[in-house]
Amino acid sequence: MDIVSLLVFVLIIALAFWRKMNIGVLAFAAALILGRAVGVSDKDIIKGLSSSLFVTLAGITLLFAAVGSTGAFEMLSKKIIAIAGKHIWVLPILAYLLGFVLAVIGPGAIPPTTLTITMCVSIALSSGYNPLMMGIIGGMGLMGGRVTPITPEGSLVSSLAAEQGITGNIIAPVFAFQVLTTVVFAIVIFLAFKGHKVKPKLEKDVIEKTHASKTQIIALLAIVLMLAMVTIFGMDVGLSAFLVAGLLFLFRIAADASCIKLIPWGTILMILGVGLLMKVISSAGGIDLLTNLLSSFMSKSTAAALTGVIAGVMSLVSSGLGVVYPTLIPMASQLAASVGGANSVAIISAIVAGGSLAGFSPMSTCGALTISATNSIRTNLSLEEQNKMFVQMFLIAVIAIVWVGVSAFLFSNLIVNILG
Image 1: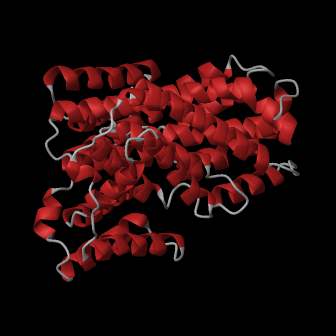
Image 2: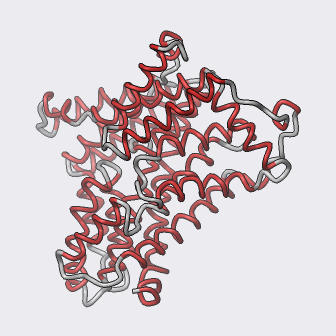
């Protein structure tokens, strides 16, 4: 059933495009049929539904719909675009730096994700860039800056490495490889979406000086409050977003009825449905089939590359920080020894990168928020356009995982030799 489960996934995507249906609806149906076929009970299938992702997506999109209804994002985007002027080529660079700086100063990649992705998408739609492109580049910045001595990811990597006797300068080569891998991929994405061909928008309403209203300032401060709740007090990002959105509604900063209607329910259904189907595919052995196939080709020279790809494949259906890193990093030294003395730090670097770049799958936070933010701002998207975005993001995640393998093969050992 492992091969069949993967074929089911391809069939669902094809049917959704052919019949112009929401992929999520078909995915829920396929999860039931496939689950029954492999002996997974309905109750266990439902357990595979990511309630945390639902709370995150619904809460975040509601909060940002509330903030967006005040014109705050449009105002802020215009100010940034006005500063860039004719030199809009700096905007993708700023998008990467925004994510990088917010991650590297301490919180890591996860807490600043919402602000980074939403701002990048908003700037893209105001400046003429593709919103998916800008969302990915901003997300690449988050991933590039996530492993430092003061971030949660850095602390986890250090502790997991130390438990297997890997000490010394671990973070520097992992950080450097992460930056190199994300920067190169961000450039590739910029070129693939033809960002270099976008012309500056010189309309008066874009370049004129804009002034923030009192309501817009309060709305933007609400986002700061939400980030503080998450980063300082360790509160759940989705629940925090609901709380802050509730305050905005309570004090008449935004109207709850209209903002609730702006939540992209179709996109959320799509993300949750396909995520659920992927869990069933994993139970059917589809993910193990891919992982074992890759492992069978592993050697000293390809150990880091293929382990990075395995990490990426695993991260398509699970959390990089919560599942992939704690699962694979403890195996690094043993894996290195089993294939004839591969570099364990290079393998760890590849695992971190694989678990990061797979996050642009539409079933993961970065990919899901990029699609949701685009749908929230561009409310006139057709179902066909939404399906197209979903598949684009999934293909980009697959390409990103392949790139991790290539980057690890070319650079991981070199970077460790220089910085390790």
